[in-house]
Image (tube, rainbow over all chains, first blue to last red; front, side, top):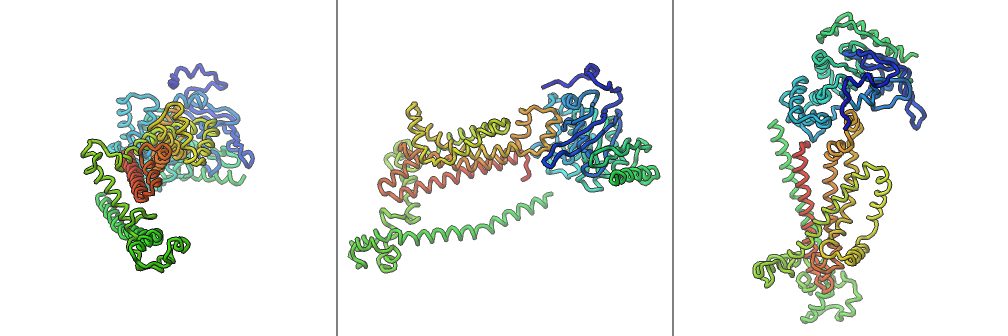
Length: 277
Length: 331
């Protein structure tokens, strides 16, 4: 097992663009072409983007616009075919080896044979935390997602929303500064989704993490984000980046304010423009 | 919650009660069919004995009767069929004859026989219990070897493309060779290198039982979906950790399905292995019965083998239930 690189090591990794300390993700002219049986598919084209530390960035766009692919590139689950991408000043693969991020998938993907507590322990076991440390962290993240008391339950005993919260707790357990969330609430109903959105915002404010969040939903993107990246398909590219003027403190009814409606409108315009091109 | 549980248990016992009459009907119908089939199957011998006892039979010579259809003989001699179900050496024994033989060669032999466990302190080698134990030993050893080998091969196949391409075709080919043809060769080859007794039979058992385990475990080890594998990748988990924390636990339901087939195959393997060896076991018992025309003895051994198989499969099923419950799988 390779021990996680100490933060000091970052500076010695040779970089073409020496990333400033406050930039967590830096993509420049990123390209990704899949070779499929039906010929090449241009999934990402010329993505240039800096995500500063502590930002909450949403990626929104129709299916096939490459938003999930971009997230997977950051996680080193896909290999870009052109351009450069750095995470914490490292290559994505080095960042993966350094366990620099937690990834939340669309489905909770909890192991049915492990209790909620043991599911959260899974990354901790792999990363070699001591038993006592594991217990402390499990208790802490369960409290963070308001699932204290469910540690001994099995996943099937929990509702879909609770399972997804447990999977967020699992991603938080090993204290990565970066959280990558791929449509985490896409399969949940709107009422549960509203609650979890509030909870994610609260988490973000409490933990000071950088979050990259993929979604289909305009209200979700506007409600959560400091930056909204609007993308369009064929080839997958960025059509607009909107910096949100909304305050960090956001009650649910902020969605009825003029500012909110104006941003939502701009997102919608961006999505439509991507289609008409 | 408790309401829901109550309803579930009630509906479960309800369906169990509903299931009894149809199952019973089918069993009774099978027995009725068996008793009926006994008459034409044994008609030659029955009529010969009746003739000797002075009953008029048509046609009246054994030679002529041999060329007549069995059903025609039954129809023409309905008055002389009384002994059909109680012949000493029937072609097809009646169920009660088999049951009585089973009782005699187990309980009666052990409690009252000179070599029985009561009088000699050890199981009688003329009783079925002794032979069943011989078969069971070889079955269990073969099952353990086959299962272990199957799991190891499956792990190799899943982790190595070379093994996937090279082992799987041979595993499939191995199962196309009739085991009755192969068994004597295995025994002769092992004997020539000094291995005899239990092990050659266990090897034949293992030969039959490793295959379902390989097939089931390969499927089970590959059952985690892309998302679960990606999750392990994001943790930078080694393939050993993926194997022990994800692949193996995910394969447990597949393993048990395979084990049920494997244990039944092991039993068949042990019995086939006993045929050429003739040193005890249900297989030896069956072959001896066929040498001496003891059909009742063959059927009794057959029934015991079937009961043994049912017991073994049931035991695996019970272990499966316990394990899955302990693993927290939804009941």
